[in-house]
Image 1 (cartoon, protein in one colour):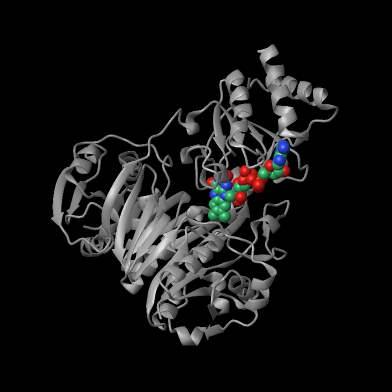
Image 2 (cartoon, rainbow over the protein chains, first blue to last red):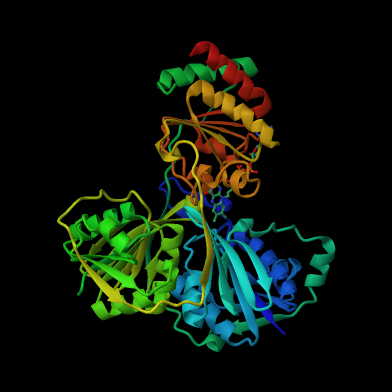
Length: 254
Length: 304
Ligand SMILES: Cc1cc2nc3c(=O)[nH]c(=O)nc-3n(C[C@H](O)[C@H](O)[C@H](O)COP(=O)(O)OP(=O)(O)OC[C@H]3O[C@@H](n4cnc5c(N)ncnc54)[C@H](O)[C@@H]3O)c2cc1C
């Protein structure tokens, strides 16, 4: 049966990042989440699998903490998830991530379509889909805002900087979808209950057989310094407005 | 030949990348995919301009061809303009070359075969420094370097094979309306806090009084389609540097705020006093935009 794979990433929530006075960054309290736009990609995969009369499978490469994501991913309508579980994922760059994902995809048969989101909300590097194409030797379409599937032909609208392009390809292929491809509905109670019963395949680093050494070495991390006045205008509405107008005049920006 | 190879689908960025490559002291070579593009980029001082020709109208279809070409040339580094198309081809080349890549750097240097760069992480909240050595790919947004003009470069045509599995069916240009936000002196920014498309009028009225341009958050253009995509501000949209930025109904998530950081004065109007936009703002009014904005417009009209 045809398989549609969607790659997703369990990331730290940027809203929980703590910045120390010396601008060092504390990520230890940050909760995890499925990367924002990956949720749209998951829904796109569920819909595409339906059109292909096949199955939708989530694929994630992450540290042991990624386990928390599996049920969430399954409650979004995927039929299975496959998890490459290794501590090495914490340090992985684009080359390692794409090799790990490609290795897992190569273990599955009948894959028609691999879907990635536009980019992950932590790195936002936007490398995975094109790199996967190179590794799998499959054609790739990025910046996809709409798809149509007819038999084994996929047509896509691509939203680029200066044009909308329509392209087509014979499956199997890799696509990277923009969040506007479809909404990512919040799973209902029934879907959450059903998720607990769905199959999970787990691989360890050794099963994947790739070199987990990143090419890019992280040599520093600091918070962006945001120095603003942070003045909240007080009083009743007309006082607030009057103070704002006065302040803007004084700043010389009117 | 060894040296730095550059590509962008926008000539302006190609020129900037050539200028950076030359500053490092390395030989600078520009790639393109048609004679027409070659002519547009030949006067920016590249040692040579290579035209890779293989009969495909899609630049992306040359990913493997570029990787093979760079390998045969013994390239030291491949720099690509970080546009939608540029990021795509850059990552393909990195994939086919089995090499490292850094995307969308905010600064970069290259000495003795080592790249040192900074890039934004977590939507812009964090700056990460990265080091790479050996051949690698770096994508760089527009405006990082000053373009220069130089002697006319020699144009060399190289026949290559394109990957024609993805077929172009149609191209429809996106017609840009109004002024370029990145050059605007004042910007009124609309967020998902506005309820209906008609309510954009509130922003327009305020913009008229101030002589401002209208911008928005990503959701306003991509989910609701109320304003064109070039009007949204943030890490995946426009970066602006106005004297005055006023937001209404914008929560101020970091992915948006990263695009307004260069503003001189930031003003925020939002009902939620805990909205992160207030931490990014100079002046904040906690209140209903439907009440505040018309009053502000009226007050400014009287005053200006
Ligand atoms: C990888 C990635 C890239 C992204 N890139 C961008 C980008 O480039 N640009 C961008 O903008 N976003 C981007 N986002 C999305 C971003 O994270 C936020 O979701 C988005 O900016 C929120 O838009 P908003 O503030 O309009 O909406 P919301 O977060 O929904 O905020 C609406 C605000 O309106 C307020 N409000 C509601 N009613 C009223 C009222 N009557 N009066 C006053 N205030 C009211 C609310 O209190 C709230 O603060 C990106 C996200 C990811 C994951």
